[in-house]
Length: 63
Image (cartoon, rainbow, N blue to C red; front, side):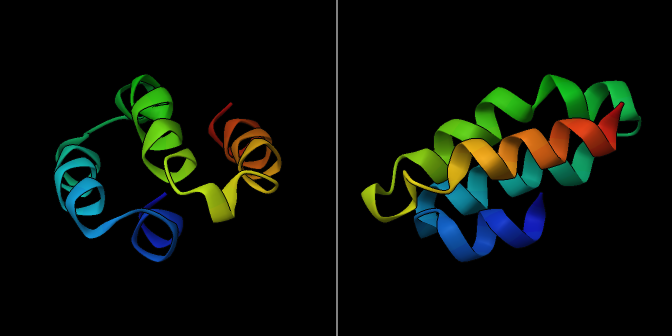
């Protein structure tokens, strides 16, 4: 999550959301942040064709 966030989101989104991800202490807490993470990387129009596939991959790994 952090890698894609830092490479695909705006610096403002990346900083805020990465703090939340770093603070997560369980898989469930990370799962709760998927929508926030998704919105941060989807906010960049250049990412729109890739974000759904990345999200699917992430969710499969968190299950």
